[in-house]
Image (cartoon, rainbow, N blue to C red; front, side, top):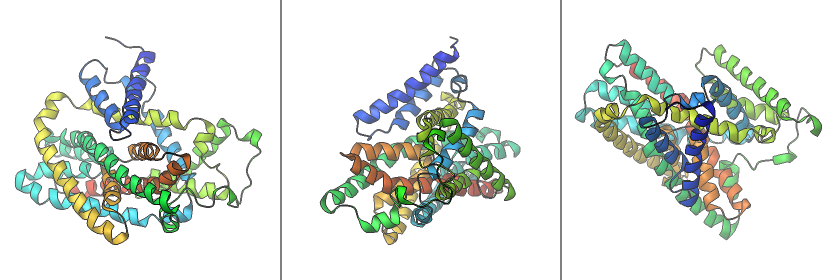
Length: 397
């Protein structure tokens, strides 16, 4: 059956919509990204064309722009001082990755051969970039039988990560809300764990705001894309050593502090939800590369290594998080960002916060505390650590 572009768009939106409805009905115990991912996978195996997401207008060119815009935008939500204060989330997330490698490279090697473990571990610690690096490395080494393993690992581990993360965040969120209802905002948590309730609109800006009449969508998007282009240029200056998207986040914070960018830029421009939907659709489009037969052939090692990795992650993050003042649920959730990264970490966290909070004040308080930790943890694991690990493991093939 041949679908038109409009029909492809309708199907993509239907998959995302069903995910949102299920999440709402289950109060985020079943996150929307999990349901949508399952629907996309079933769709690719049955009636949906492999390029349905591209034909729905969410191709590579769209995503290259989207990622940069969204990450600069997230910077406009944050305070520079409190962005730096998220060092605890960074430490926990990195230690969680160390826990993954500790068990896969010990117990995993007792169960599976060297190349299988080496190929599967980097994508287990991060995102699509690590998976692609390992897949291409296996092909270059002539180990073509395992070339699909990293991609399959990247696709499969998120199915474990989504519901576990949602459960951890709900436990932590309920604990935070209980304290908020009994004693009000925790000054220590606001000081150390928050990004979004800082100085707010009272912050002094070096660059005065444009008149309201000129704060239009084209003007806002023009300024945001300028900042994202600067981030790409700075990343090239480092030879790619510093990820472009990490720089986008930092520059978003800096230029918002200066006053060049409006706070909540893409929300003001009216495009934020549209870009998030397109980015999620593109992420799920990666599911089209794995066939049922391929997945069945390697599902055993993948599931065992995922279980080992998650167990190692839980043990290490819990031990380290305890010393940094994180609950075991918060520490585990920060570490679990390695299994999906942005935008899933943003979507799951906001869904959980909205499902727990009964008032706008409670919802904002939860988002203010939980989202910064999850975002920074995700950037550290997926955007930085996993790429470094993949580059090292390529030499071990």
